[in-house]
Length: 335
Image 1: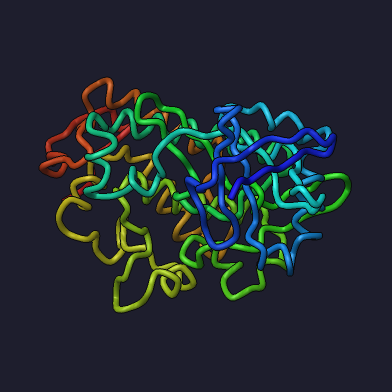
Image 2: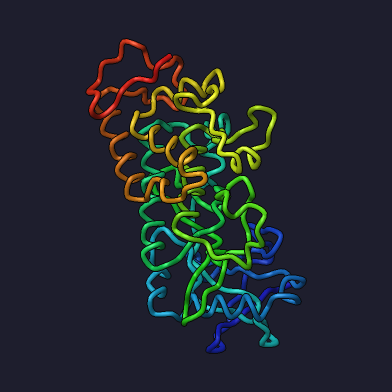
């Protein structure tokens, strides 16, 4: 069956019959005539219940002057224009084709080796810095990602480029109306959002910073969740309690590679993770800011360049106790 769609001006284009990606809400098809473009078509059952809501949001995202520049942003697969079927029914939207491997692979204790064989710590920091600068651009325009799912961040194995996809789920204010983010994994949410109806509550800079810190931790720690099952409780329970087992008095860092990785991170970076996940659990004002994370990751790269931290993704041993770097910049983790 040939798939043909058209834009609002009536121009038609043929899509690849088989989608190259699909999820519970939609399928993404290549456009053979335009290799740099893909089309996201929502499934019929989704359109049946939410077509008007989805169309209103997408068309607001593509028409609002403050957001229109994101169509050309190198780090975003932002909606470009609506597409319709041959009967004139709204089906979804076109966007640029994003290349890369999902960040879930990058942040995995084993899987990264296949797609990122040359990956080291400076490269890992580079990916995170690119992600953070794009999120900074979004926040400056009032866009909240909301759903910090690492599967929606694509990393290019041949560079440090990161592209954010599934932008249609984010919280945006466009043409005078706020469209909330209705989805997120509970273990990626700030504690004040747990148990809430996400389609009825607005994300804030503070809730974003908590979710973002979880994502940064998972990437730096090869998939380990900062509130992983400790003390018999689930990550969600530990988030609500503010039980973060790292840092002084934290209750115990998991043994093995996790301890080694943590020990080789800059003290100031670890300090802000502890601040965000302990003090910031119930006091959102204590969460590290985007600017602070960017500065800390640049610090990490500089310190690695000075030989102060292991460049390996999995350091074989903890940082030695006799490490004597400049205490004003970094200091060792006590054994």
